[in-house]
Image 1 (cartoon, rainbow, N blue to C red):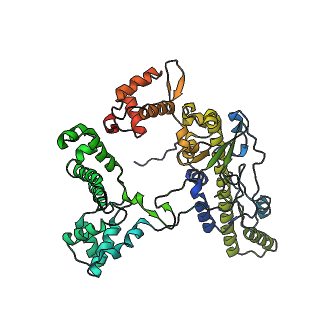
Image 2: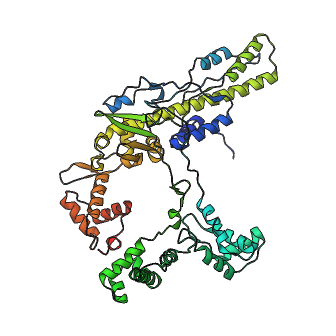
Image 3: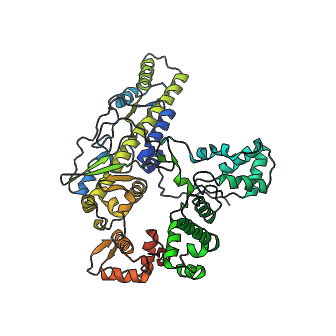
Length: 521
């Protein structure tokens, strides 16, 4: 039987504007300009302002971080300023005068904090630096002419092989897969023998080791490349020994079973050390050795554009938000003029149905532009408030640069100070960078759990990791510390930590186990 009943439910829904803000918070400064340009292209009612005014000149910082959260009441909650809808009744009456004046009274949007750029110099442009250079694969293709290939088909095969080499310089595709690629893309039939023959020639390209199918082959190509006729006899002997180790004893070498290697090859410790040192000089990623001579930089170069800058000004910390890629935005005057025109026609009684539809479209575009401007404003405000609270919380680090001075700090601590949601603080911390006098740091690095030392004081896990790194850095490379030994050393310093926790911290620091840290000294 079908029944009807009433029920009450409490649902929490995010408005489109709140979703837009969350997405903008996740965008780092380096790509913010691209997102703004996309919005400018999609919404003709939005345009860049000609003036760059500082909306927050009166933003005063105090030593009390809690007061900082109350600087701007308009943005104290994670909500957007809602725009009142235009009402149009059946007779064509509306409140356009008030709606137009609302936007005409607004100044050009501005969201600058302290400085236009993190260098403190006048802004020259709003683009991120881009390295313009030949790619690694372009460099390989230029060398095809050195192969003395027999025909056009072999040239196509060489191109296919080079195109299959990955960004590390390795060829990880099987010959049969390359054969299938040539059949489908070039209608070219070949065989595994021909593929391997051309690959062997490509493996002689610069940089050495390119086209290898695994690490062992990569290192062997490079050590053979060093064995030139002009090399002295003593050095050639070392190269030959290194090649033998890679060829016959690669597993023992990779696991650092040096004693086993000495016994198998009948070598002294010094002889083995010389050979191992030559192997360690080789490049496990051949592509990283390619440098475009015209640009003088590695093809793998990447840029980090800091979102904030923290400077020590005569004993006082100064925070600047990088607004280089956030141009001032405003409502397009032409769209406001069209609203005025419609309002004048309405007074004269000359508005038709099509004009009403057009003006509703204009209204939607203006509201969309207003919402986006508000979102950018709130993004900048949220970023500044969050980073300012972190700076105040970790003052000792920003003054000294000593990682041991970092206090235990979790997302909840900053959320309580800023009156923001924990998820909002997390979005800021996970994708943003701050430039300090001690280097550019990811904001996430300032957060850590706490543990107690023997004196009962709470210390940051970052402090423990720093001490752990120092202990490993100062150990004897011939006999590295085991996790149990590291546990005992930390206990002597007042940190009672379990061995499994030591292992966890070591893995987080990308420090291998003691056996793999062993070296021949």
